[in-house]
Length: 211
Image 1 (cartoon, rainbow, N blue to C red):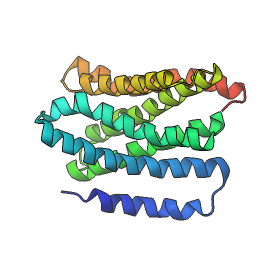
Image 2: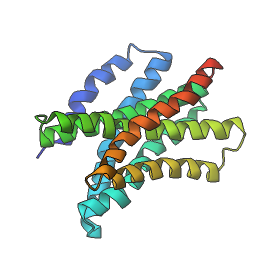
Image 3: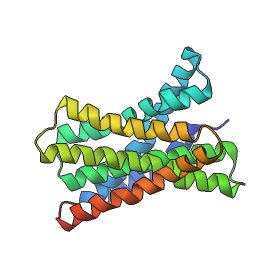
């Protein structure tokens, strides 16, 4: 048994102190990083509760429930930031990146403390697959929202569509890795492959001075 709340406090306090001395884009990223860790813990509470009351197995919960809850929990602070502060596209992108990275880091820390760090294979899977998956899903979500903003099509339908893309990506990953063999190998390679593909539009946007 681990005390996730204590782990969160231990990791978050140095970042909170650093916020006092940070400004502009770096501050946005660090604050979003902290939000990502916080919503990870909150999402674990909600997912665990639904798992208990629904009677679903751990596998079914991971495939059908966790992607919806976790992506929604990551999406809500980004949506709040978008409508309350009306940030520039660069700040929105950094916020999404921070939330996804913070979520991935905190989840990996908790899993490693639970299962141990003796297996290099397990560590590589947690870092290169699961960790990257959370970051990629948020980057995809941010790019979809930025695209909707560019075409002045930021509506409930477009936001729901963007959220559905991230949920589908997350759910597909969990489904692929739920079995062993070639299917799991494809699932483990999916996040890194998608990250490499996302670098193409990112590089183009950076060349245009947007990011």
